[in-house]
Length: 186
Image (cartoon, rainbow, N blue to C red; front, side, top):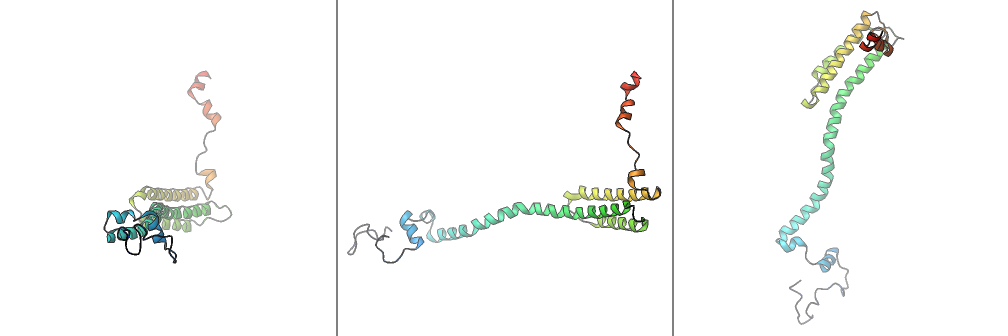
């Protein structure tokens, strides 16, 4: 702008370049130049480097705006996938348990034992990151509980769990009668 702003044969000082009396419409870049002058980067850096940085910002700012939420979302999605792998075992254990407690059908002990064995083998072969070891061991413990539940049902003559697997818990009134304070009074 400084080069053409001096007076000459055809223009007065500061008359050229101007945006007012042009027959052709100005581009957005020319309008921005007339409005605010040279861009900040072009004033501080060589022209080629300022243009390179401007283009890089034009590409990388939207890329970072898209990538940042993805980076925040990926660990949550990974955790969900790992927990889903574990939850599959629980769904299968629930179906085995429901089949064991179904009173309308005869209990096929060998089929149930085979299903539990398959679950246990799959749980042993399942490879998860170390952060999920406790969940994997919990699944293995629950498979063992399911096996002991089946053995309990078989030893009690195919009686459902609610009736004979666990001893009945004492009622609250029975507990209050046996408390040390009540024994001293009575």
